Image (cartoon, rainbow, N blue to C red; front, side, top):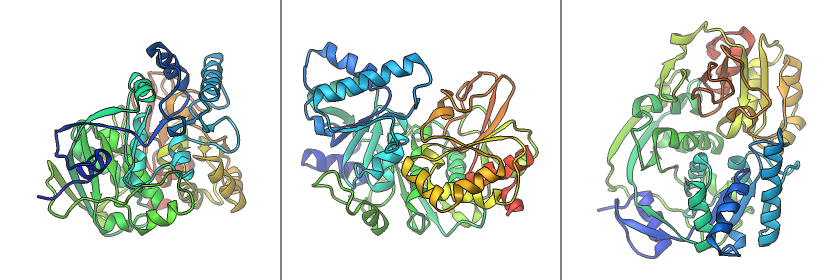
Length: 418
């Protein structure tokens, strides 16, 4: 009987074969945290261990509130700086123009590598599965314990196989696909499972598109989500690698799955997640004409260069009808978009382009909502109060759909704008 990706990755880490539902203890290859490093460091100090087990395994990227929008954020940043300095930990990305959103910066810097085990104190750590990494989010106390011991236990997850064939039609993207999948699988349909994306529809996708898919794995309850580490992945990581001993792994053809789903990407249409859950799926036709007050393009889900290009394709030569916030996912992306004219095009349309960070995605700053306001967003969560007031409304959509809606002041079909 063949092995799934999760069985192979966790088995490789401990040096023997493992099966689904077995409990294993592994040493993480990297531990990622962000602004919550301060609170984690306080818990770490209570354990009574003075030094983390391997300082070079820690990666801290400040991104949730940058620059600090409040004194509380500033204190967290200060604590993170001091802790990383005390520990002699080299991989610290401060509030400077070399940083960005953690789930973009982490792979850019070469930490997301095939076959490695990565834990992060953020639920969307599963994004790194786009590179064939077993990556999962954990809690703050768990992270403090991992820093102290160099160990974390997992139950080897059962696996879900999602097969995609074909290609998207114009104006349709990976975000539309994963929102459709979310609507089918539901928010608890893959609880503590490893979601594997298979098929030529996936291998045809860019790295950015695969990151969008894996990013939303947690929104169906998954422990991790992963795409095959093919030549595109190997080309991306070449010259960036921050570790040795990584290995491209993929599931065997006869691996056993708890659930399977199959899609033809040519059948996917623009869609949204309606308030207030990510699995509250609707096609664009079902929500067209819904009034919006704000549009938001960015985040670790859809703030990459090709996402900005998609928005600019819609917005070029047109003016927005509602306030529209654009946040590139990293400063590297910001620079690329600036040099190729994308930033200027977005500004000409009336968009506000902010510094790289999470900001409005978690309702911290740079675009929070007032009571009764509605926003269409490229982010990954639309829970009540996620972007500000608990009486606001969030629709999740692709960069194409968000840009088309920004022009109209209401939810619009991007295929019509194209």
